[in-house]
Structure formats: C-alpha cells, structure tokens
Length: 399
Image 1 (cartoon, rainbow, N blue to C red):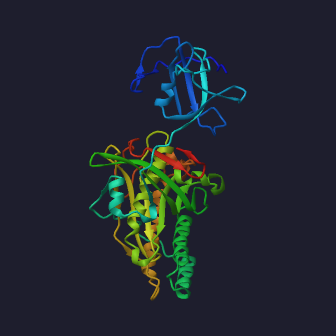
Image 2: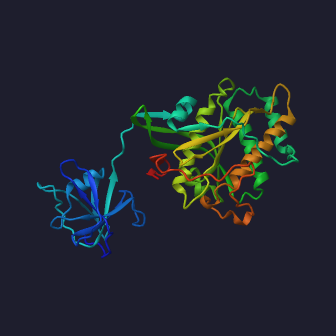
Image 3: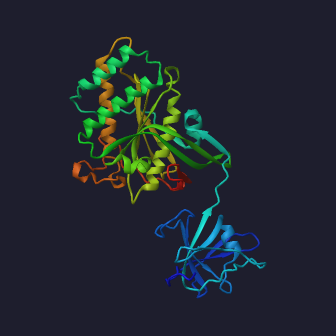
C-alpha cells in the first residue's frame, strides 16, 4: 500500500545495530517515510498512538527500528482496509518496499511492560500508598468553609436514614452503602437540582500502572479495583459511563467494617491519586487537577482532596478531622446535618472543579472560576512522568 503523499517530519529515527539504541537525526533526506501507528483494534485513522519519520534502506525498513519501539504484530494498513504483515529478510530489512516521502499507516500493539507487583486498592495500606504514589501529607487539617447558614437536613433524607437505622442492625454492607448513597444523592440534588451536570456512578473499575523507585531499584506496580462511588460532570449517565472516571471530580468509598474505618484512608488516597491521573490524561490544556474524596461507614466521615505537588511528581493530601452523624443508638439529627453540609460542600467544590476538563460547559452555571473558596492556590499541572499508563478496563485501551 502506498499512502497518500504527505510532507515528512523534520526528524527521523536511526538505530545502532550493536546496542539497538535509538537516536534522532534532524536532517531530512529523500529516503524517509512518515509512519503513523494505530492499535490493532483501531477503526479510524484519526488518533495514532505513535508517529514519526524513519529512514529507509533501499526502500525498506530496518527491523531494529521497530524492535527498539517495543511493538508487536505490525501490519501495513492499506487504503482498502486490508492488512499486510511486515516481515523481514535475512538482512533484517522489510520484505515490504516503501515509497519515500509518503505516509504509511501501521497497525501494531505495544509490548506490555512487565508488572512486578499487583496491588488491589482494597488491600493497600497507607504506608504502601505513601511510598508508591509519592504522597505528601499536609499537617494542617482541612477546614471546609461552608455557608454561614447551613442547609437544614432534608426531611426525605432524615426520614430515610432514621428508618434504616431503626430497622437495621447497621452491621451489613448494604445498609451502610444505602446511607452513603442517600447522602450523596441529596447533596447532588442540592447543588444541581435539575441533574443537568452531575451524575453518580457506582462500582467503576480503575486500573493504573506506574513505576516506583525504592533505594535506586525501579519496579512496575499495577493498582486496580472498583471505586464505590464516583461523581463526575455528565449530563447523560448512559452515554458517558465509560468516561466517568476520566472526568470524576469526587469519589467516595465505603469503609467495609466499623473496626477497619481508619484502614480505608490508604485505599481512598490511592484511588483519588489514580483518578487525578485519569483526569490529567483526559485534559486539554492547563487545569487544576484537585480531586476530592471521602470515606465513611455511614456514620463516621472523613473528607479531603489530593492535588499535584510542586512539579507534579508527588501528590499532596489534605483531610478534615473525623465527624459523626450517629444513627444508633439514638438518631443524632444535628450531627447528621453537619455531615450533610460537608457532603454538599464537597460536591459543590467538585462541581466547579476543572471546567476545561468537563464534558459540559460549566460557564452557564456562573461558577466556572478555578479559585477555591477554602483558600487553596492554583494547582500546578501534573508531570506526565507521575503515572506511566492508565488502563481503561471498560474499553480495553490505554489512555
């Protein structure tokens, strides 16, 4: 297949056969082609995952060029959609002959990096997460500046959670999960009454692969598992379910048992740091990547956020003190009202977070400012080296 003529880039790849190290030459010569690489699953030619110009030898590709790029199953993707496998002769040159100064679309897959350690979010410890995600803990507690006149506890929410508490032992996961869901739903209704911009997604799987260094030794770690609740900017939950994690500004996890409440901190920070990276990968231009989180057993709550620190190579964490909305013994309506106002405050901040990354235009809400009411400064962009790859398990692609 001969691609449509196109102007080649002013760079091309050259490979040293002895050590297979790539170098870049800034000189254009006529014996180059522009290669655009697409995944094997690609249907359109609009989003190559790699593209560059490469020097030819007698119209043929050097095998070591592709070997150095860690690519597998390489095919020339012809104009009619047919695939021609790229094979090599005894001299390590391609059997397929390319025409110089033209573009060729190549279908290929990248070789997956070896994963040295697999970690479930649900079993991650705080110390482990601090090391793996370069967490910097803020020593000052976060005091959310909620409205001077607090929202009253909605009668529907008050009735629902008090009935559940009266009729349920509160030891089951489903009861605690229902209470958390009720708090979130009423908070979203308070902030976005017409449900035009926000949606709640449950049990969304996220998967992050990153490199970590310990005493000069580098290893690749994979974190994966479901997030209990994600809140993102989305007007249509069905059509945007696959993108919710890429635009989620708030996540909430349920502490599975009252006795392990504190252990949930490591999990929620790891998941929030991962969502931070999803949002960074989905960004178009500069934006503040502050991502809010909470964890709760239905009665006890802790709220916080993560944001890039410094040049973006680490993640700063700030959290509130623990607060309680006791349901039994006895229904503490005042405590539940305090919890509700903090959930509303968290949703409100998430609502106006990173409007440039939003799936909707938040300008019409009149609240698209990036300034934080809690006194936070503009957050820096995250360094792309923070996370090496983010895996989207819903569409089986790497972002």
